[in-house]
Length: 402
Image (cartoon, rainbow, N blue to C red; front, top):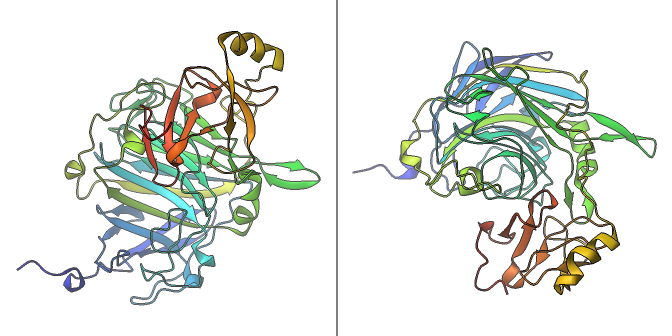
């Protein structure tokens, strides 16, 4: 008979060590059980290269003792004003696969939780929430980077692919198998920068900048993207994350799959369809690899994709009147981009497409049934529907979203 989840052997908790340039040699600690109590998957460490099996997750740690998980054991990396770099080989992980390198503030979680290792994130996976920085969630077709406040499972995102709220930065021409800038059939370099600036005489986080590069690519400068504007709960969530990044977060890798990965690799806001269907059964059991980790002081500059870190398109009240009122626009109520915040009037065209009121940017429009109508890059021609309560997204207006 097939073994029950509790009878399956736990993966080795201490598979080896890896080097982090600019810091120290670190232990790799493997998550040994899922939130249901079932055994998780192994993570291999060979000459410092970390290779999670499908279903595996591992943390960087100061020490490792089999059978012991302690919030104080994990490596805490201060990120404010730093650049984090690593090499990733996606290993054939395609549609329905998620290869991730990210940070959470799990050292602040005093409870072992459902996963028995003090794990926490913004999605409450193991029963505890904390701030999260997703440098990379990717497969061979798509790439996403996201900042999360602890209570915001959606976050502020950039990249390519998926129906979830984000700013589309690239297309399949630049990123994907055989693409010109990042050919995902080969390893590539990822850099995440966390620059600061002065606001009211305080040094605060300015955003997260992502650089992707690859030896031999015809795209000489690689790819860049920036999470430079993120509101949650009516506040500037980037500034709100400053203290968490200053105190530091725990780096980790994971590799998992789902038949419902459309938020990451489904139809993008510009209409491209990286993955027509998710096929988690096709995700290789063992394939992705992470290596060449480093943490250094940020010494670069705000690259071209950053420009102004807040959304730029704005119209005057007169321009809105000229564009909308002549078509019979009416007022509606809008909420913050993450589904919360103060209500403001937004002009809505008869078709349900919102325009800007006065000097405000396009905000999502609250609809019935908990749905929001979301606008990409403040472009009223590019709208989709998102339900923060269920994390559902759709290009077609749901019947209950009247």
